[in-house]
Image (cartoon, rainbow, N blue to C red; front, side, top):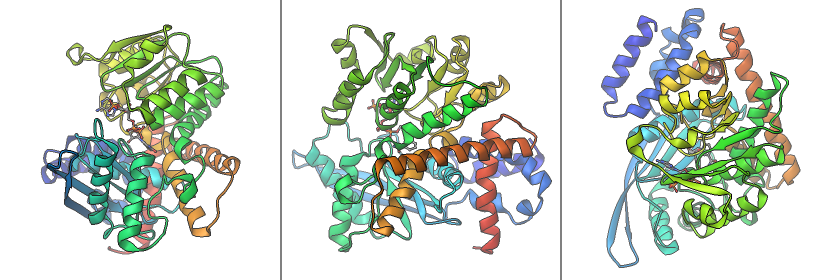
Length: 453
Ligand code: NDP
């Protein structure tokens, strides 16, 4: 690492204490950008890095609500408006007990580069709350969402900041929040994406992150003249991203043998086919149950509870060729990364954001496997949110086929941008460097054009 990068990181850590996920996300980008700063010193002179790591605005607020017993509950709400150089802030809302400023800053930071890669005019933002939807009644979720939006609605808008879903925020939560926005602001506009199909949502938006990630894996495999057909795949998580990753892998002739939640994973050697996936969708999206129920229902599967004391997650210790982490950040530690390689995995397409620890990323890059960072391979979700915004502005809705074609083209273009940028800066085949450099250049140039703001 150059002295500039080292000094920069030391100052960032001192100014943002206690936010390890944010430090980790910035470190990865800074490492990738060293050749850019060497080649183009004007970025350094104009302090682009110093500016891009400070949110344009950070909003924090109290979210009081009444539970079903009539007791007062209080959560913390956040929105990080990170960068608007190339468009209105855009990025999801996460409801999970682990949410705090550091997680949202890492996600908002990643979002800036990801949105830039999509080629659509979207800046970066992220928000959410430490509210945990697990075990809450629909009424409690609605009351929370209404209280959350009552405050958030004064900061967002169709031309300023357009949130979407993320962990713990799906169609139900977007519906409750959209309803409250409309009620308070008295306007029916595309202020959120991931909306219901009957009230402004886009076809393919629910599928987009998972489908896009699989399209990206397909592009990576194509560089070696291969396809997903006949490949065994490990998928983690069992939420939105995981479900549609499984669906698309199945359509392309691959076989998925795992799914998980925070309690453990299921291994089904026979493969999670369309019928089994329909069971998972009902289990997770309607009944809101645990993945262990899969093994009770399907005898071909076994359930393996997560055991933190082992120091690794056994979901990554199965024979396969491809892995699609689709749960959460840092879900693949160094031991897990080694297990994946040992078991024959040579394609890792990240659906979740920053699922691999830095040592694991270095290992994958060194071993020259087909490894794509989340900000490239999971960008199909936000790209399709961008398409939802376009349809809302046009007051039109496109067919499923049209949106899917756009999504495929966007994923192809993101893949090409990564490959080209990596090659230009002397790191051929390194998708991490490629994504960070290509994502950075567009935003940095826009910031230069717009003066010191
Ligand atoms: P969901 O809430 O639909 O599903 C999340 C899944 O991950 C659940 O199975 C959940 O299990 C599991 N999970 C969450 N937190 C943890 C944890 N700390 N440890 C273990 N398992 C965990 O979220 P999404 O599918 O939408 O998001 C998954 C990932 O994809 C996230 O990293 C998100 O940022 C990223 N992403 C999502 C996009 C989208 O469009 N939705 C777009 C781009 C990225 P449990 O129920 O037990 O918590």
